[in-house]
Image 1: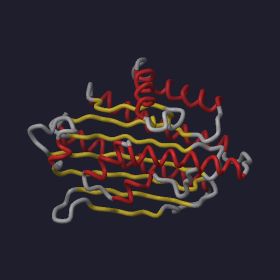
Image 2: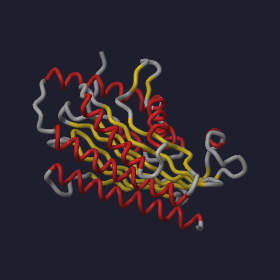
Image 3: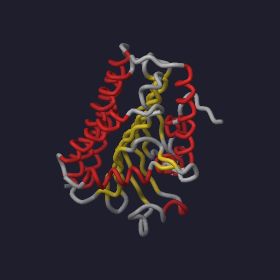
Length: 275
């Protein structure tokens, strides 16, 4: 398949899943047209793509949720070039993806994150994943969440869940705190074994996230909570901020490739606390 067709198919899927997820969020909130939509362009002198981020705040369920689509292209800086596969001879790149971060009003509902992307330099690859960060322990939620991930992964390869769960556990970890960010999930990168199969898996991950966040919210969003539990949530969000600013690859990639700063930092919660 032609590389330009691959890019177009991937890009169209990321834009489609953005629409689908936003509709679900509006349905859960019980209101339409709730998102503040910002379109942005990369590059001041020439067209180098851009994207659209959508943010909704202060809802009955979502304290803040961001759904970001991007399609950017151009040349990597000399400093960044050596960190990305396939740029040793040509610094050109193309990248598109969808990124979602949910911070909830109710402390019983965990923060949730999902992203998938397709990057092309001298060759292309998929990456992405999802993870859940509760502030209150719930073993039943943890067990159910990982069961759903395993079922989705097993549709494509029996080894995916174990492999990508371990990768997620390593990735979403705060070494300076010696603690995981949450209860894990799946994470994968540099996926380029078979384009059609890899793309099918990426779509599966998106639909799996759609089902998971809906189910969790419907089960837990009406549960009562206390001020003490809200304070615990604020402290846990502090850890979330630390990870995203210190270690997150997506944050670094976006900032170092001239992405929209507000869109990149949409993952930060509206209120966080530290002791």
